[in-house]
Image (cartoon, rainbow over all chains, first blue to last red; front, side, top):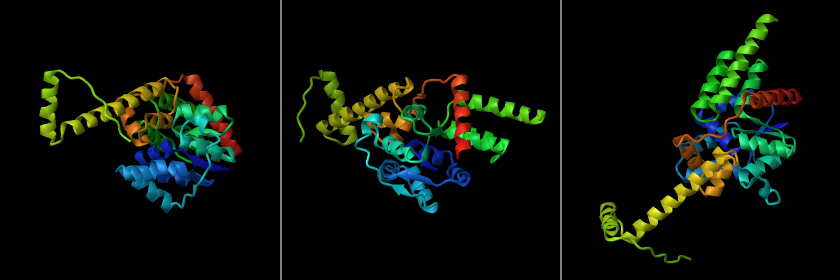
Length: 170
Length: 106
């Protein structure tokens, strides 16, 4: 299995300063497709966005492969080159990670595995890969950059509390 | 290829336009072009942000349809406090449960 990062996930990971931490947590390979790279890194650098330079550095440091994907036959499904190529990569043995509700729903509609970034971190907490304090910090950071919504954060906080209570009772 | 588009403005509007052009050190035609293009871009982002808020498009799709970069669209929705449609607790809990199943498969 491989993790496919979409464009908004990449940008939000950098904005929230969680990119390195995210990469540390993923045991399976991470990759992005060429359309996402062009949109996020090449276009971003051209337009002067500092996040784009940071993303480029992270991709290089962690040797994250950039895979070219032919999107023409499926572009109509997503109407965005980056989203289409994530879908195609995830369809071939992968899970797409996004911060976008609509993108997650579309992936599910086409039978492709997808998970939102906040949920990915929450699952890491449930699997005891990160501590309670860390997940709280992560959720704060994600909310701070709009990578999660207040109502999602509230449900995660409630679940964290309930999980702690269950553990206590065991 | 470019085309000439004309419009009518009253005396006060023309006067204001001339004043701004002088301040910006631009010729009037370039200034009008700049204003029209800037406003068209904002209009497109505004329209797509509304669709995003209604859950009809993703943020990436919104950016592509508005013909702006994803960075610009992100900045716009954050500045205007535009969020995707609210999800209820059940929906989010279902997502958590699906996430759990997914993690088991890995």
